Length: 429
Image (cartoon, rainbow, N blue to C red):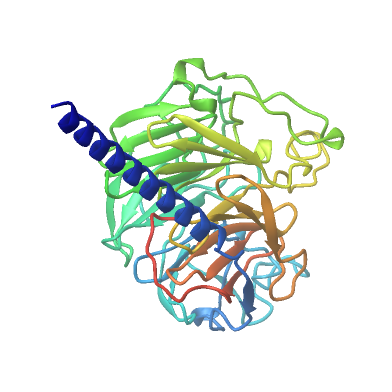
């Protein structure tokens, strides 16, 4: 009897040891596989997209772009960014008559294929009731801003001005649905009423919706707004929300983000998010990544709002303050380093590629440790360089596409040189 119990105990112990060894071995192999993923390398494709566009169209400021499940690239081109000299009138004449036969702002929504062919073009101010307005949320900002394209090919578009919201269209531009939760539009001829930040309010977005993404499997909409992340279902019903370090909405401050001396070092660590959340994306391992431009940081949460980590990106970049603009101040315009991001092409998404519109570069960081590992591009106007980089997207082969605002006003394609050739479709970037 004692011998039998000893044999059983030995067998069980041996099995547990074997399973533990197998688990440890798998963990080591996974770590080694992740360690073997090289830092992505890229070469610009100077012939993408194919030009000229039809109808004398010019691409305007491009704040956001995404790829869909056909590897088509969807670009937000803000028509109201067209300058008089680009339209060829007004610079040397008191009339609005065109001086030459060029040019016209392209429609707000442009669909390209990976070869650079234009497939769809639609949308403009007044296109639908509730279409994004001109920038009254902040001076100089045009309304059209964020976009997503779901597996069915539906196009979701937001605006970042007072009274803007989220609308859904077919890929050809037919209106389907309005999210609601809109604040009031300003009354023409009257100064707009001041907006008081209220992070506990979830039924109205007074300044529009600047950043969002979709969780298609859960049928949820993630919105980054003011100092919090809010989650709604596909019918527009609020489900949950959180702030910095995963704090509940009730604990989020409604005061301005404190100032700091940018010449003395990076923005200091704080529990609160800033009010300039500039992107939100979902990774393959169920995490939520948020660009916090006023803190030069990427914050990471679970989808239920538990804080995981954050890390600095080009931390010494000026992130906020008088030099960044506002009434009565000279402005540098470009401030903060975390405008947008995509994840690397490997199955585990080892790296995060962060678009930086202030330093005119793409920074590459290890997604889990936050360590800097490389960069792409430099300031300039030539192919492969950037001026006020804002939008970034990735296709299923790991090629990246970029968009520029201010007077950059262009899109570019960068071809992945050291990928594995495997097509991968992931949550929308």
